[in-house]
Image (cartoon, helix red, strand yellow):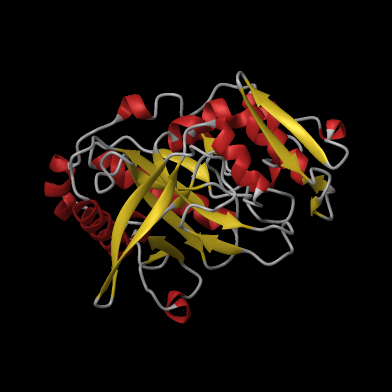
Amino acid sequence: MNVASRVRGRAGKFSNRSSVTAITHADKVFWPEEGYTKGDLAQFYELAFPKLRPYVQDHLLTMERCPDGMRGECFYQKEKPKGMPAGTPSKAIKHKKGHKTGITHYVAGGSLETQLAAVNLGCIAVHAMASSADAPRQPHWICFDLDPQSGEFRDAAQAGLRVKEALDGLRLVSFAKTSGSRGMHVFVPIRRGPDANDVLAFSRQFCERLAAAHPRELTVEHSIEARGGRVYLDPFRNAFGQTVVTPFSVRRRPKALVSTPLEWSEVTPKLDPANFNLGNFSERLRKADPWADFFRARQSINAAAKSLGKL
């Protein structure tokens, strides 16, 4: 996106074929230091949406609403907001809290109109469940969230390579991306069928065994104090109802970083995730997509689950 072409005025219109979504206060600055506006964010998603779409198509979304931009207060909303366009698809999901049972109506993604309407409500990032509305307990992917306690991406990169090596040993194809912050996400596309609880059990056991094999580098400790300077392997993005930031999502971070799909050859300690941001990402979009084969690589985890003891 050419930031010089920012939307000016009180509203901008972004069209995709027959749909048109009005962006109110499009010139409102969301990133003060960089000067990026709400309109810039909408333009980014219009440009990136063809590549973002597969990860949100019929997937249930949680809204992270930041009406005043990066530095303002934000809140998470699972219930479909009243400000979404009429006809926005949603899915009612039952949930328990203590002894009470409730219902949440999640927005189902998949259209540019829905994405831009979310931006209009102040949503910067895209948070999606691994499952889709027609089978909410059957994930399409496993996500390993790598959080470096040092705050240094180089540690996340090294951990990512450890994860890939272990997954290779289980004959599972994996895909890497920046988290859009200081960490990394490693995704494994899977065939639908296993329940979310089984997928979580697999990912927990994988993380525990890998951390045990590399105790100086990796940890599964819940306590931040107990992690030391190690990279936290978080399997809990795979719990039912949890979400993860999708590929091609902008983050509420300085410089407006983008969660960027990577070639594994790019995953090195020298990689700087700040190089992928709202201001220059159009250059990345013109290149071949490292995740182009993601959904064609869906695989069973049955054999891998039986082989976890060999890690």
